[in-house]
Amino acid sequence: MAAIITNKFRIHNALSFKEGFSEAAATQMYLFIGRPQPWTSDASPDTPVDTVESEYYNYDDMIAMKRIQASDVSNAILRRDWTSGKYYDIYRHNYDGSAAQGVDIDAGTSTTRASLFDANFFVITDEYNVYKCIDNRNASNTVAASTTKPTGTSTTAFTTADGYTWKYMYSISAADVLKFVSTDFIPVKTLDSNPGSTDSYYNQWLVQAAAVNGGISNIIVTAGGTGYTSAPTVAITGDGTGATATATITGSAVTAINITAAGTGYSYVVVTLSGGAGTGAAASAIVSPRGGHGVDAIEELGGFYVIMNVRLEYADGAGDFPVDNDYRRIGIVKDPVLYGTTTLATTSTLKATPALTFNSGVTGTFSVDETITQATTGATGRVVSWDSVNRVLRYIKQQGVQNNIAFQTGYNVTGGGSSAVGTVATGGLGTPEVAIDSGDIIYFENRRPINRASDQLEDIKIVVEM
Image 1: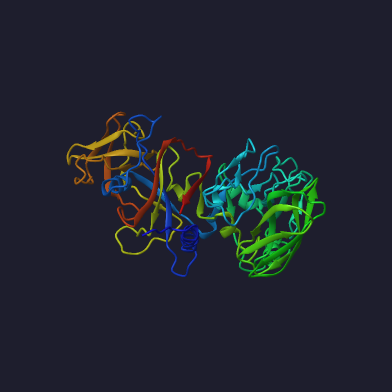
Image 2: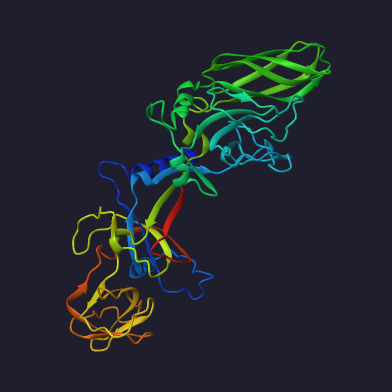
């Protein structure tokens, strides 16, 4: 039995994932940071593994988490910058890997595209406008390099001086550029309603409203034929209506088919050339996506990526995110609960570490990442943050080292590297704000050290491909 998971399924999953952030009973997703302790080699972080054990370890050295809001999430597509001198693929409804229908972006030679979304058929310009390539042929019916940047926000396709035909899709707002544009991805959306004429996405709404279902956007000459003394008649047949076109000959061969009316309602088309005293000319029509070009940018451009952006601001959450240590892991936790409860967490930030508050008279200064030991009880931990003013020490477990032994009040704690000593105060056993091991870690990545500072902002972008 032959089967395939289609790109539509991937887009469905991406849309469903994004919608989960804004539904009435929304899924609570939190970005977390962790792993303050070094890797064996910080230049080469450990490769993540998907095991039950690794999930426990991720919780053990988790530092803090921040809720990902619906406004922090966008569908995304690959970023393909328009560059003069490059060769761009055209939109085709039938890229299937069986023929050399594409063009190498650098050399201009024919190449095979396994699917539409493997093709370089759309671009983003330095004005953050996104365009779909409808045709890449010059007046001689040969594929040419693009040398004229597409501009403007017309709702109809337009041809630039280099012969390329482009279809404006949408423009990215300044706010979304800052939040979601990365080196490899750009945000994409499909509008459900008119955002108003002053909105950055109003031109996209006009494009959506002007889209024509089943129009013929391009007809490609696949064989020029011979012996033509006049342009042959072009007949377009199929399941739609209204499409018309004329042929152009150069010498005795057909070199171009010019669409005079795109028609509507086509899902399949046959193009027939007759007359003109020649023989052998043939052409193939390109049918627009369902609904027409521009009606659904997410579906048309392959929006099966989801990009999330979370900003960590200084000591976010009144100190939930400490600034005196680094971290080496980021990830996403789905539906964690508050410590000591079964209540789903919804607050903006959460501490994931326990803490010790010492009596006055602490000697020395505890150092981040050093091991602490309470000799009387045998409890151990690793310092995440030390607040000398309030005498509060946040720590994580020593993985695999007497994790079942808890610190107790009234006894000294000693720093293994600093030799600092403090006595845990009565009531000085602080708990995390989130229940450790609650929820599901659905994503994590191991990184080189990321240093923090009290005057630092960090924009963390995570892209998930469905």
